[in-house]
Image (cartoon, rainbow, N blue to C red; front, side, top):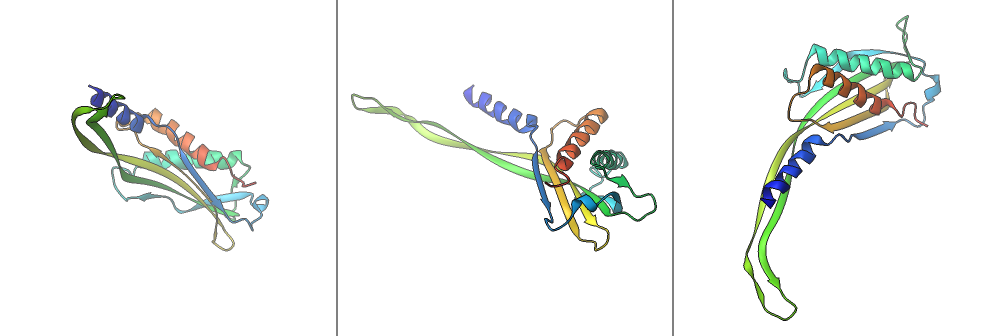
Length: 185
C-alpha cells in the first residue's frame, strides 16, 4: 500500500508540476532602447521535432498572437514599412525525457540492547517517461542579422491533452514568462 501511495504521488508530481524553467540570454553590447519595431523572420515559428502531431496552424497562430501581444506591451511595434529594427522567430520544441526513481524496502533493524532482526532488503527502480514543451523566442538585429536576445521557457506537459481554451491560456502564460525580462536591465 505504501509503495502505491508513493508511486501515485510521484506521478502526480510529474504531471501536475506547473513550474517553468525560464532561461534568457542577450548581447550586452547592444542598445535595446534603440529597437522600436519588429517583423517576423521566416519561418515565424519552427517546430522540433517536425512532427504532425505537434505542428498545427492553430498552435502556430496562438504562439504568434501571444508573442505579438507581449512585444507590443514592451513598446515594440510591428514594422509598417517593412524596415524593422528586430526580426523575430519562435520555436516550439517537445522533448521526450525520463526520470528514474528507486525505492528501498526491507533490511535489518537493530535495537539498543543488541541483536539485529528483519528480512531481506531489496530495491525497486521505476522509470517514468514524460514530455517537456519549450517555447523559445529569438530576436535578431535586422541590420546585421545577429541574435541579440533569446528567451525560453520549458514546462512538463500534462498526460491528458488540454482543451483549446487551456492550450491558449498555457501558451499566453508561457510566452509572457519568456518575454517578461525584455528589454534586459
